[in-house]
Length: 217
Ligand SMILES: C[S@@+](CC[C@H](N)C(=O)[O-])C[C@H]1O[C@@H](n2cnc3c(N)ncnc32)[C@H](O)[C@@H]1O
Image 1 (spheres, helix red, strand yellow):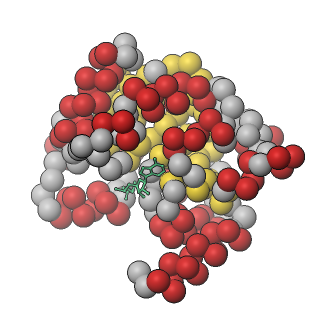
Image 2: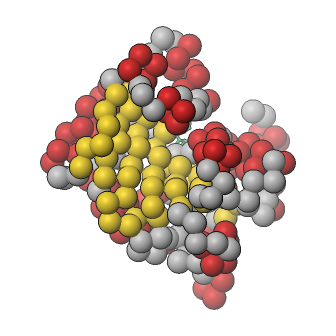
């Protein structure tokens, strides 16, 4: 993507009615704790798509589950632009996007506000464990905004991140729900697990194995 195009997308995202940023959570305008009442204007459960990139999961899930709300979270506006634009074009108002660092989720959500989380092809951060989105540090952040027993799904091409997450789940006494070593060989939950993102398509082209795990906090 050219520099001009990138700048244009950053500017567009600021104007999109379905994208929220830090400024929406400042001072008297603060929307923290008001996703149901002020943004979605319903009490339907909220699912986050973390590291959403172009937001393919939130778009696909919002169409499959019109009685649920979805929020894609990522720091990169130009990627999010694609998902947000698609949602506007398709008139999907049960999906929104939040451009922010996942590290700061507590600035945007209050306790018990989130029901479920999908983490889809996050960077595996092979050398920086603390930055991994399934590290104990991040699980603690999710605990502070999720309902007790909230379900977390991880889909990844990284065996290192997958094995690491299994170990964290054990150490943190989380409840393992499902573990799939090869999504396209073994999964029984194809309807959800086989939604494909931009990164997943690249990994599949390279012949990588896609793994999935879900657990409750
Ligand atoms: C490898 S991409 C995957 C994007 C998308 N899920 C997909 O499968 O195509 C990882 C994404 O995570 C985002 N990301 C990584 N760490 C983050 C953090 N701490 N806060 C917000 N976004 C983050 C990056 O901006 C990037 O868009």
